Image 1 (cartoon, rainbow, N blue to C red):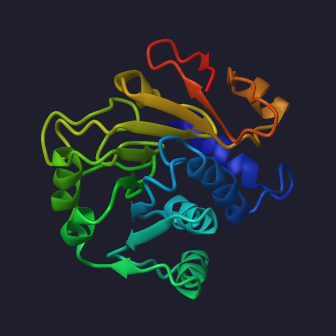
Image 2 (spheres, one colour):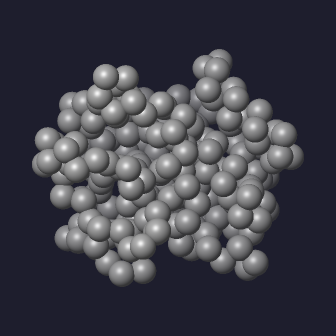
Length: 228
């Protein structure tokens, strides 16, 4: 966890990498929007997003790729960056909903972006019911960085609403997190902006990306790169 926080801080340090937080949202989110099975836009156009910053940006990318995202964002942040991201979606006419269960009935894919990898503690309202719905639905669910309610180190919880929640796919951003060893579905890595010196400093073994690809698929057992 300390390594992940160090990488994040170093990427945003003006004297080091000079990335802005908004650019760090955009690059991984672009990778999320390229992740199968969401490529089948004609057959599978409706996406319901439960939202973090990455989820907001990914929803915008999906709209531009001719998907029809709906955003569930019950606790809207007062942070200026998040407000700007939400405004961008509203300007595109992307609908926001407070009725998660109702929206779930009309969607064909869910992007789980409720919590980031720094989540810890109890799942608070209104999210326990949402996570239970994600666990029980037969609709494909893709989680960003960490399935919501999972511990970054120890993976799925042994109790609570997230017990037994295993999404269809996982998209790790920057690098796979320790919890990935507990995940056995399709696993993708997105966000190809880690510089060689950071990879060397933190001993990150990152796979190569093909051409202009924004994602690579990883073997859930070995963590090694698979060909898409």
